[in-house]
Structure formats: C-alpha cells, structure tokens
Image (cartoon, one colour):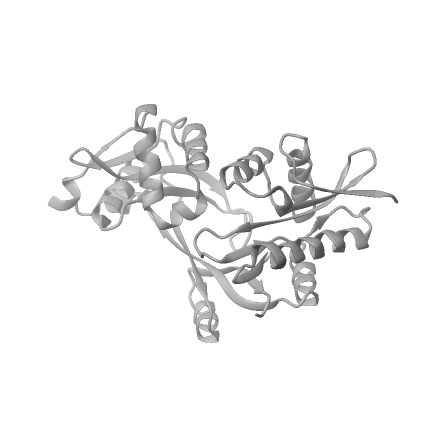
Length: 311
C-alpha cells in the first residue's frame, strides 16, 4: 500500500479523522473541536503531530506530542494510534520521526508516554513504549470520596462559611471565571491557555443554569458545576454518580465547603438525592511505597502510568 506522510494542518479534516481513530481504537471518546482548540490555544508547532494517509486522503495513523504545562521541560508523546490496515512500518516511522524531532529541535528535559490502564490497548501500549526504550517512571492515581447529599446539606454553616455568598454565573462573569480557573493549579493544567478556558466556560459552564459562583465581598473565589455521569472504567464501572468540576483560589477552603453545600442543595432539588456526590483528585506516586500503600486504600485507584526515556 502506498501511503503519504504529512504534518499537522488546521481545518483540513485531520482533526475529525484523528478523533474517529482514537475513539475506535482506544475505546475512549475524543472530540475534534477539542483537538483544534488545543493546537491553536497551545500554539503547537505543525511538526508536533505526524500523520499517515492513503493517496485518497483517508487517515490511517497519527502520533502527537505536547508540552506538559504543569511540569516545565516535560513533553508527552502519544502512542501512534493506527487502524488495522495501516502498514506497521508506517506506524513506526511517524513515531520515530517525531521522537527524533523532539530530541533534535525541542531538547526536552523529560520525554514520556502516558498509558491509561483498564483499556483494550493497555498491554500493547506498554509493550510498544518499552520496546522504544521507555521505562516506567511513575503512576497516576485518582483519589475519590463519595458524599451523601443530605449529609452535606447538614454540614455546620459556620460564620466563616456563611461569610461567602453564592449566585449563578452569567456571561458578564466570564473574565473573572477564567481568572479563578487559572488561579487553581489543577484547572490551569487542564486549560493551560485562556482560549481553552474561555471555550469551555462559554460552551459548558455558562450554558448550564446550575453552575455556582462563590464570592467573598465582590471577589469571586470559587466556581463549580455538578453533572450526572456514569463511570466508564474501574471496579465501579457503570455506577451513576454526581461529578463536580470546580476551581478555587488558594487559601479559601471555607469557600470550597460553601460551594459543595450549595451544590448538594441544588442536586437534591433536581431529584438526585439517591446519587453520591463524588469529589476526586489526581496525584502521582514515584516510589514503590506509594504504589503499595495506594493499593491498600479503598478510595484510591491507579489510573495510568508514565513511561519515560532515561537520560
């Protein structure tokens, strides 16, 4: 089969085909619009993504890389996602070419690939990265706590918690919500550019009339949005929960508590009182002690692993 190799070009239909391949091969969802936003918002070099296509323009495989905003000097390189009909040597070539470009042009301090566990491709991805010389560096964990909505509504409303006010966010709050997101370390990692944060806030947060803003006097200090979802992986796969996406300024723990209380009240009004409110956080474990201890904690689940090139 004759194939064509090319770098990324925006709005040429590559994003849609890339999203389809990832969804089909990985079993996890991907969104073409999000791919477009990330390339534009992060100002990625066109050479940071490589593609294999047939002569008539059908995408067979792709690989991409991006810098890790939370860790300066670190770049993540993806697995070369490919359809079954893609020639293996073409799949290998785009990965090797991108790896060489990163080493020769970007000179990252750390080059790593992420492997999400509990998917149909996990073993193949681990084998691939190991064959390319990557070694296991650290594990990514999700720590989750389920709250009963009625219990949360009965939390003590201390004077400090009551000193914060709550209201619905509107389009007039856009700039302040973006500022709060970028003041929250985790949310800044999720939406590293203002453009990405703005898109998400305008098209998700502000379009839901159950969003919550928490203020101290006239300053916005926390923002959150609850939504129903079903777990797609892990031991509780299929369980329906209430998730909370939130951002909070540093040094305002009581504001976050007020946010959770207001969210719980709202969810009960919507008839969701039988669902748990799940609050989750991500963290990394480097040592074997961290890995072994995490296995003993019921609320902690190993989500993924990073495989890095030794330097």
